[in-house]
Image (cartoon, rainbow, N blue to C red; front, side):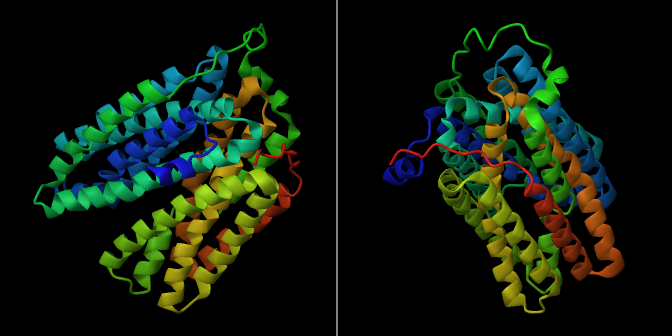
Length: 399
């Protein structure tokens, strides 16, 4: 408990609550998500095409709704109802995959699950900014993301333990409802929304029409993030690189858990560090680090070095995930934070689908070295755009 208190020192209770919400949500979803490909092939007789359709529809849905929910939360000036709905709907339907008799039913469940994710993401990120002083936002987003990644570690381990005990896939899916129920209680007890002032609720043009109020610096940041995302393929390709190098399936599973632990720790450190050194230097360092790791992963012939690079890649997330969110919050007016996070998360989500298609196509045509080089080059172009984004001068955090 003392360790947890030290980790969350200076972070508002609402942010800690949202971190726990994400942790239990990821625990629930990661009990199911890694097993879906096996379930589709062994239980439902579906294949790679069905999996591609399911994930493509699911992620595209989430990306679009992140933008819409950002507009909506700013229009009604409420965050918590979206958080309740988003986590509640996803948690309620996700375990119903246990009753699937065909892959279209899995598609329906994944679609509704991603509707929930799309609805909750921008309002949640905006609420973290609403309740946290600017000089502590890096730490706040770092704590939130680290707890999220901790749930991603626990989920597969719990699923593996249940399977080891002799339970079938359908029982594992159904039991994922337990952490989903916990989520609702945590939201009710720990997540508090601040009161809005009269200035917040005055008559203003619709938020959709006020995109220009976000400023040129914000849109340059979104452009840089979009360019970077086009070269940032799904992490599944990193696992494929390990597999091609001869790493066994058991070791890949263990390395994935270690990778999530690295992401968890680096988010805690990186978020707090950005409160002291600034957002821009951290993201620049993270993207350059990403480019170097990708280049080395493309050309190395040593399996041991490849594993080291894979684990080191987890450090990139700590230099960027919490920091980019804190930067978005700093560049956006208070009454447009939901919209700002909608655009930010939407840019990442919309860019992710073509990124993986292009990366996979280059891999298939020219090999992994060319694909990873493409990712590194796109990161380099994004860095050049990012250099033009204005830094936000932060108040010095209290010691």
